[in-house]
Image 1 (cartoon, rainbow, N blue to C red):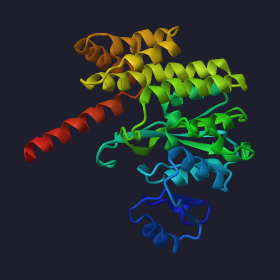
Image 2: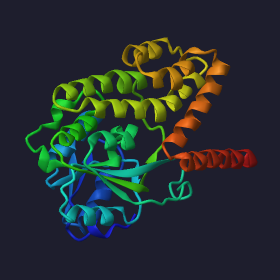
Image 3: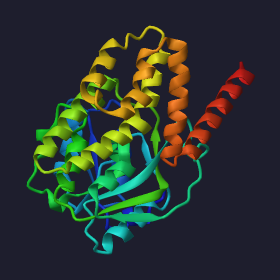
Length: 319
């Protein structure tokens, strides 16, 4: 999408090529001829997503760093809006750009948007509103000037290196910015094939415990947990049970080990992992709907269902 600020030198664009076998180098070279602020780094071999993310953060020179996934798209005007906000001098620790998922065409599946920006001095309130998107790299801009002494390579190995970058900055930040209108489109369910409950239950739990020991307010960790249990885990637990050959015993054990004292877990997640499959799927559908409503995200869910139905109808008509 056209972004004026990316063309006038105010924004550094750093492309890290993780030994791809496509035409990335040629495409970047053509753009680099017209944009002196664009840099290109190619790894001789695939170093994995964690190390690639960490390297991009370490190499970035600006005060603020926005790590963008290769299949995520900033909507038109997003970079200009972001530059204007960050140039105002408020010194936010983290800036949230609200994303929406798409399956095929991010323009056709755009759910519409309204709202404004909110400033927070409470990390707990900010983390609850951001919720599971704390793990979506394209949804967060981080103030690198707060953590220039940190080597992000130390965070590799959990599939959540970006979360540790953000929490490290959050511990030193005085304020946060939450942008309510949708500004990022991300490719839905592109997880890279990792074990869902291992990453988002075990690994995220370990990370939060470690940061609580380092000064993260317990209420902030609890609010993030609550957001995950109500707004994120029900849908993914439903997806697990939708697979008829999936044994969820290991997933259920991980959840119960971490969330056994959380009422939200027993209401929103455990029935999906425990009940007979038909009842579990019905419970999961209800839990997802309630979570969408509580998150103020029902419109996005409706658009998702509408676009899925439209896509299946088109396939049926062609077939």
